Structures are given as structure tokens and as C-alpha cells.
Amino acid sequence: MAFTQRSERTRTAILEAARRLLAERGYEATTIRAVAAEAGIDPSMVMRYYGSKEGLFGAAVDVDLRLGQAATDCPPERLGEALARHLVARWEGPLSDEFIRLLLRSANTHAVAAAHIRTIFESQVLQMVRDALGDHPDAPRRAGMISTQVLGTALCRYILQLSPVVAMDGETLAATMAPVLQHYLTGDLSAPVGR
Amino acid sequence: MAFTQRSERTRTAILEAARRLLAERGYEATTIRAVAAEAGIDPSMVMRYYGSKEGLFGAAVDVDLRLGQAATDCPPERLGEALARHLVARWEGPLSDEFIRLLLRSANTHAVAAAHIRTIFESQVLQMVRDALGDHPDAPRRAGMISTQVLGTALCRYILQLSPVVAMDGETLAATMAPVLQHYLTGDLSAPVGR
DNA sequence: GTCTATAATTCGATAGAC
DNA sequence: GTCTATCGAATTATAGAC
Image 1 (cartoon, chains in turn green, orange, red, brown):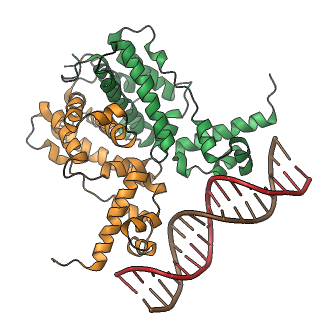
Image 2 (tube, protein in one colour; image 1 turned 180 degrees about the vertical axis):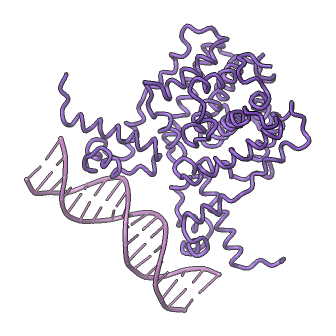
């Protein structure tokens, strides 16, 4: 259909406004009234289309991470670099969205958002490690530590905005993170980083 | 003075209740009424002693991190391990407090909390790196990356509660984090394979 | 020093006109 | 399909009695 109905345009306008505000303010501070104002429509429309604030959040958070793509056609010893580049591209490349910001900002006070992150990083990241390592008993711990470095980087760069972390360009950030991710992926966890 | 006045006891009871709730719920979701109920006093007392919700938050967050202690009498090549152990002990040892939880939970939606973390990690962590390295131009970037690993670990363990990260005992967590911190402190940041 | 009472907002959600 | 009007609940903050 080349023609989108008025209601469809309103629906997506609401959703985009909600994602923008959730990424900026988190769940509690994002009011239905503010979403409506941002979308340029009446607050009651939000309720009409999404039923409740919780329903709106559920719709806003329903995004595919596509993390599996990072591992395609990549030798295990370069997986850390591939993952680092994939993530940074996802965060701030031309196809970026504010998804990671939205999740981090909302996860603190909103249990559903925290559960969502848990699901992502206990399935997708763990799955990726298992694809690289096989079903080694270390796999969950490795996936967990990868999550600490990845989410910590996003937290410091986008939420807390620590100046040295913000100052790096995407290339440098990925290159700096890569050896550590590689270490957590395939390195000896009880030995120094890098062999 | 061995004798503490009634007002002093109330003041500290309020502060402790506030820290507890802020660590659990973050800034927005922590209401003055809930703090008062937790402390077993009237909501208006909170206003009387701390002026406003913002004033209460400022008082709750006014804590000394004592990060410098980690570096005393430690050779540079073991600094990563010392830092990792110091942090884990601080987070969950016998002298623990919920300070890191409080900050992380509030920083997302409350600008003052984010600024507070920025100050801590742009002064104390950077200072620590400079004590170890001298005033190298890499120092801020190293301090920034240390912050990503440290805060990311706290985020995944205490806030998001990723099961593999929660499952590790403190000893294992510190030992796993230590090589990465050492890498960021004194390693070759541009080398894909370290040393 | 502690509490009651309440003002002034703001929120999520509903009912219904057009 | 969109908006007006409003309800009921919750919030921060204030004024003042005891």
C-alpha cells in the first residue's frame, strides 16, 4: 500500500515519540501527556491505541536486536572485533536507533525493561558464545562478562556521558573494546588479556 | 557526645531510609512519603530536615568513595587485581553500602546523579590512573575504559541481575575482572593481542 | 520536635460529544 | 478518528496546631 491511513500515521507517530522520550527520560518520567505533545496529538489517542502506559511501553520495546549477524563468516579469533564493530554500528551508525538508551534508561525502575535486557543477554549473547565455543561450561560466565563490558560501555557513553568515553570516535571505541571482548570470548579467563 | 538528640536520630533514620529506597527504586520512584514510612515518621519531617526532595537526594549521595586506598603500596603490574578486589569488597563486603546501586538507579533519570558519577570517575579513577602511569596522554581514555568495565559489572550484577554475573562469588568476580582492568591500566590499548 | 490538614499540581485513565 | 472534559489518586510542599 502506498497510502497509509491517518490512524496508521498516528500510531507510528506515537510510537516514535514514545521511543524518543523513553530513551531520554526512562519509563517513570515519560508521561502519556508528554508523548502525545511530542507526537502532536491528544493524550487520549495514546490510550485509544495502546490501552495503557504499560501497553505503550511494550510496543516501544518490541524491537529485534539482530545480534546473530555479528558472527556470520567470522573466524573465532576475530570474533571480538566483529562483535565490537557490529555493536557500535548498531548504536550510532546510519541504521542506528535509540534502543539501547531506551532499555538502559528504563531498566532501573521498570522491571519489564530489566527482564527484557536479561532475556536478550541470556539468550542472544549466550547463543553467540556457544556458536563460537561449543557448549563449554564456561559459556554462561563468558557471556555474562561480555555483557558487563558491552552494557558498561553503552552506559558510560550514552547515559552517564563520561567525557573520555564520549570523546572516542566509533572506530576507536570498537578497537579498544575488541581485545577485551575477544578475551572474554576465547581467552584464558584466569590469565592476562591477550594470550 | 555519647548522647544523640532525638532530632539527630530522626535525621539519620531519614537518610538511611532514603538511601535504601533510592538504591531499590531510583530517584523518581522514591517518594518522600515512602521514605517517611520506611523511617517510621511523618512525611513533613523529611521536608523540615532536608527542605525538598532534591535536598534529601543531595544529602543521601554525599558519601566518600575512598577509591585512592586501592593503590597504596601496590606495584603497577598488580594494580588491576588490587582495584578489582577493592571494588568488590566495597560493594558487598562487611563494610558494604548500597551506594553504587543508589547512584546507578538514580543516574538514568536524574541529571544530578549522573553528574555525580561523572565527577567521581573523572577525578578519582583518572587520578588513580595518573598515579600509576604518570601524566600520560592516554590516561583519560584508560580511566574511561576502566569505568566502562567497573560500572558495567555493577550494572549487570546489582541492577539487571544477569544470572551468570550474579552467580559468581566475589572472589571469582574480582579475579575475572582483574586482567581486563590491568589491561586498561598498563596494557597496549592498540594491540589486538596483548602483553 | 512531631503531627494534622490541606493547598496546588500532575498523573493515568474514562466517558462521551462531534 | 479526534478531541473536550473530567474523575480519582498520588505527588511535593506549606501552614499551623499541639
